[in-house]
Image (cartoon, rainbow, N blue to C red):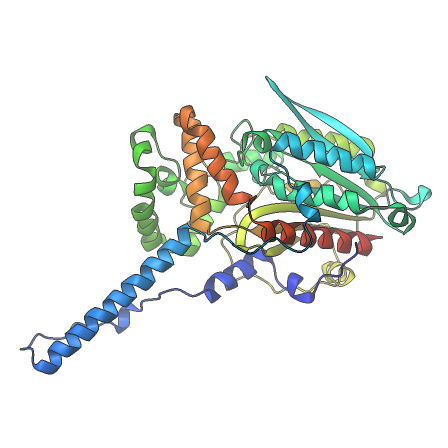
Length: 453
């Protein structure tokens, strides 16, 4: 399967596309400068009619506002009948262990070289599994490499795992005969989070905030805990035992309060920038490089000739952000890439600068950014995050908040909260969503492989 991506897919970064789609979906915007209170006077018949009309309009506005609020928190199930082709559905797993078995079977069928990296957590059978399809030319096996990652955010791994298994199953002897780079598929980079249905690892660390150097960790810990406002929102994002009984009730007024005080953009910046001080909080980046990253560093150094690679691309699959069933891309190039325009031209991509979309400008430690730093001499180096939309942002935040609070303070509630968290990142009963994920995920991987050949 080799599908060329339409230009619209890669025309803008996923952050800007998400912003534009959010804006385009509409909402009730009140311009307080246009509202005036008139002086009172006796009501006439006409006034009574107008009062009645105003009341009706008020009811309509209230209904619209309620509908908008509902849409922010909840998502209407997609009752689209199963797609004509259900071949992809068999690659979507029920849990981490099922996903791992599917990946291993597909890798074996594709004659890929398999590596199993044990991931040690007491009383758990976990591993980071890797499948490698060597490049076409024996004397140039490491000149060009494509690395596809799934499950850096644990519970989000169902989508990336399905893409990897389906793509491997689609490979044939004909595929192997075509010029191609070395292809490395990394399954379940965060196996603990995948198995436990957590977005973070066993240390409550977000691996997409953790890929930093020792010096960078020290700098983050030296910063004020409230540099981006996280300390101000800590109680809202991370409920304590005294507020656990009213998580849901307190979310609405607290979210509205922070929105009024800081605005949407700053609230989002505060959340996604994370914290390096509150170790039980959401989006905690840790204080040292976590095992997943260390293990993969060792693997790449042992199995790839890093200095000989001249072209490298990393693809990282996530879910949660954006319109349901649609994927958006974030394209990253390390500072070592001098001719950035040439790299974009090579991939036949266009991008619009997202200077106005600044909420993510303080977030650091992304997984693919750290891995690309392993290839400082590669003139062509690019990282692509592919994000598939699921439900509304506030529904995702609600599930994250509830699951983390249960994990930290009331383990008896954790499994139910974890299943709810899975359901906002993995629409396992939505046939159309799964078809979109698999087909478009495979299309992007094919596009990058063909470009890097």
